[in-house]
Image (cartoon, rainbow, N blue to C red; front, top):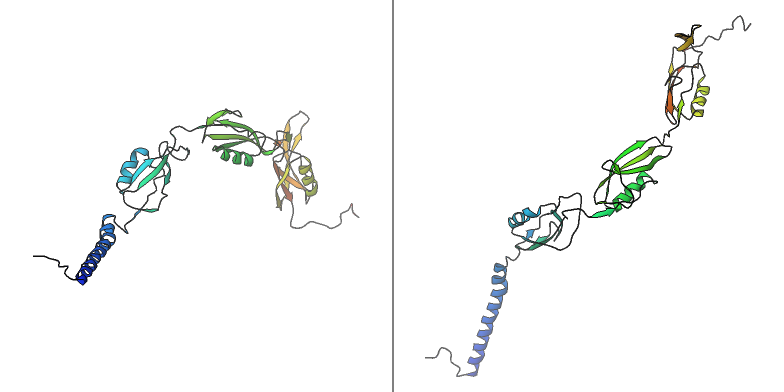
Length: 282
């Protein structure tokens, strides 16, 4: 008994159409049912951020997230990350990938590479910051010392010792600077401003290379002055200053100071001044 009869030509066409229809069904089944099912079509994973993860923890970290990894031959170094931790990764964090996708990672070098120490002495602190960043070095502490130039780099140190220009040091090292405070090394004595009027006192302060500090006005003006006795001893007496005159200053007269330091003064300014003519005026 024959299952398919080909006695007539239209039977052949019918059989061809039937086989074509079956073929189309197989193609549709393969691409729209089998392939999506076998490849988890539409299901993606979010790539985690593995930067900073230690190499020995990578296998477990990515395995739990159904991902794999491969270490690249590239090298790099960052002082902000521990040695042999992930420095870079590809794909980047938050990328969408299929399950079991391989993540390519670059590890941070176990030992930092050496760089030559640049010259910072003779420039400004701001310029030193820019240079250190270019060389992947860090700015440490800034020790200000007396010098006429403000923020002028006087010395460069690492771990308490001077580091010379061109010396090989580990990348990421912290460089300490010694800089000028702008005050200078010149020492002088604070001028005696007691009993001077305000204008004369301020002129004396500026003329001495010092700065005018706080100016305070008070209703009483008793100045304390030194008086040398005939036997050479020093005694302190109180004496009232004239209205508008200095009766107190800080620092006291004769104190060692540096250029640019401030001097505070107190001015006697009573509520009213007796302007009635005296016997001498008449």
